[in-house]
Length: 168
Image (cartoon, helix red, strand yellow):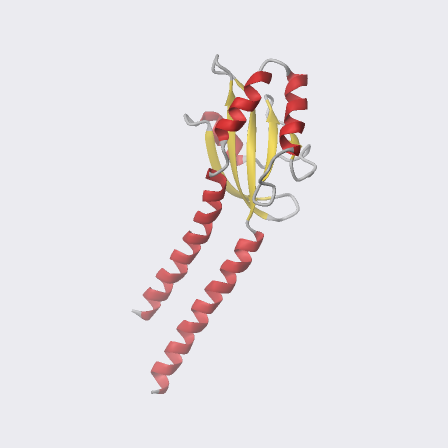
């Protein structure tokens, strides 16, 4: 029974931590992005300039990085200043292209190994065609470190209880 309780504690802790990352992503206002970029749907050069301005003025840099993706699926700018030109692991972007909600999330790793949770939102013109996307990225590095620490405490507590049970 104690083992089951420990497993439930570990699982609920794990789910709570990743739910926090999802909530950060869901708090990113995709309506603002849609409204901002809608003026540039038909002009690629203006869209690029708007993407740079949008990324530079992104106010939640402390919580999430933002990428702007062009209509061909190529990341063109990052609010974190990362080189996004050779990035091909965008599962959430490809899922969002076919999603009715134009939105998808995934967990992945950056090319340099950092674990992240991502959310892509497809920007759609009034005619229904995609003209780009906005991708929000939250680092899971600190969250994973905290999660490991908390799970370690749970496991040590479990082992101490077992030892006390057998020693009494």
